[in-house]
Structure formats: structure tokens, C-alpha cells
Length: 415
Image (tube, rainbow, N blue to C red):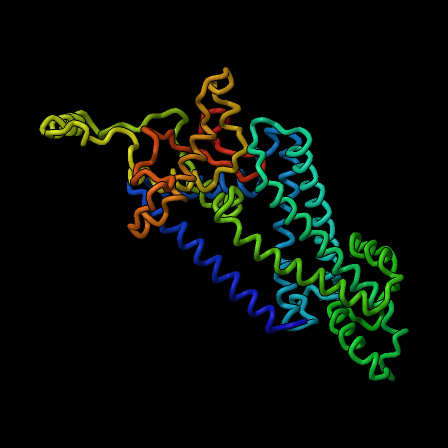
């Protein structure tokens, strides 16, 4: 492979990601209203395990829920695979030490992970196909059906297919290696032999099994059988296509997240951890006691302009950091609107659209909020007002998902 190319790709994409995440972090700090979500740590750890990692609420919409669970756990398994591929750009035989083709302590750990990885790739493809069906065929009105969702699904599907292509080309090429005569290769074949040796290095063992269906590579071995009639040169090219497209798309995908509704992939864990643990529907008092309330009333009465009194949310800084984190984590699935009595009876109010509008306002005016740079005339910004008189702060956040939005409107159980 190419260490220089991978170094350039990693440095460029990770630097861009760090910049984007830093901007989102700074934007989060624009919210100045006090909020403490660092209490009751054991409870918070439990709800994170239950709702985020356990995907407990996903079956709320059964088909979409199962599809999301498949993609979620598939990605958890495949994250290690992506890191392995990045490592192979520097060391062609890299397998994370214990995950190679040789047994470790008598256990086929590498084969076990390869099987798990292949199954994960297939179930992610199934989950992505379900979401394509829901967006293109079903077109549920609760969902935001713009191009972004399909583009992300296209990237996910491409990542899975190119990973399988890489494995298939590798296995087919290993089968051909003995017949290439690389030990006494002519100058014309020397380059092909060297390239082939680099490609098969991760799976090259003395007693390599013949090409066929293998339990430890269910998807890769099927792809290998489909490619077995191709020349060594073609297989090298296909292996490189699979390797570089998958390795690069993962990093591109990560850079898209801070600017898309799929940002929830990054924000959902801290958002669930910071969920409101108070009884649902409890209203926060304006003051701790009657004396404090009378003091607020007295101070307001002394003001020349009564409009100076802060009631609800009128400006960006009136939000809490948790409210802004809710905006980041919204997946536009429409579940909150689905459970809003006003929306379901045909009224104009849409909790989902309120959240999206607030998030978009923060995003479009981030330079003003963070750097103090006012937007040009005609920009869709309106000073530092949040654009709404109030915001019903989102509480018990979802465990991420194409179909899972906010658990903030009282329609799900509290932990």
C-alpha cells in the first residue's frame, strides 16, 4: 500500500474533523443558562448503557428500529476493521497483533473476528437497504426525506461493499499466487508479483486453505469465488479500489457528521448520559423559594423597560448547553411530532421543525455567536435571537437512530 498517501489522508481528514468538532464545542458554550447534569452518576451510566448501547427504545418503530440496531452494532464491530485497514497502509501484514490468520493461544481469534466482521457488513447492508426502502418507497411523512439521508446511506452501502470487495480480491489473489511463478518471475511479472504479495500479506500463511466458502469469511469468500476467474493484475487493482475507497470513505463520513443530522452518532452518548433524571413533566421553579421569587419581582418592577426581564428563551445565550446538545442530536425522525397532540390533529405546531429551525439558526450564525462576526445583509440570521420565544427543553434523549428523535415530550418511560 502507500504510507505517504495514507499519512496525507489521515492528517487532512482528522485535522478537518478536529476543526469542525471544536467549532461545535465553541457553539455549545454560547448557551449560558446554568445546567447541572453531572449528578447521580451511577444512574446516568445505567441509562447510557440501556438506551444508547442497548438501543432499548429502537423498536418504537419496529422496522426502522431493527434496521437501526443492525447498523449500530455493525458499525461498532467494523470500527476496528477500519483501524486495521489504516494500519495496513504502513505495514501490509498488520492485523492488530492477535487478529491475524494464525491461532493465538490455540484460539482462532483472527478468524473469529473476520467472521464477526463479515456478518456485521452484511447486516449493515440489510439495515441500510431497509432505510432506503422507507425513504424511497414508504416515504413516511414524519421523516425528513431530503437528499442528505440517501447520500449517507449510499456512503454506508459503498463502505460495506468495498470492504467485501477487498477481502474477495485478496482471497482470489492468494489462490493464484503459486501459479504466478513469482520465485522465477520475469521482469514483466516482477511488479505484479510484488503488488500481489503486498495485497495478500495479511492472510498469507503456509497452509492457506483453497479458495471456497469459508465460515470465517462468509461474505469475503463468496466474493472471492465470484472473482476467481480474473487475472492477478485485475485482482490487485480491485483490492486497491476496495482498500482505498473504504479507508477514505470512513474518514470522509466522519467529517460529514458535524454538519448533518447524523451528528447524533457522535453526540448521542453524552446526550443520553446528560438526560433529565427528574420526574417527567416537572417544571423548574423560577426561584428556590418565595423570598427569592419576590426579589425577582421587585427587581423587575424597578426597571424602566419591563421587556428587559428575561422570560423563557429569547436569545441564544438563554439556552442551556444541554438544549444545544439536543439540537445537535436531533435525527429529524419526527417521533416527537408523531406524539404531539397539536401536530397529530393538524395544527401548525411541529416540535421537530422547531428543533430543526433552532439548530439551523445556531449553525448559520455560528461565526456571529463564536467570533462576533455579524452576517452579511440578506443572510438568514437575525442578530443573536434564537428565533423563538421559548424552547421546551429536550430531556431523556434517544439512543440515536434514523428513526429515533427526542424523548422529550412525555411519551416514553423514564428510567
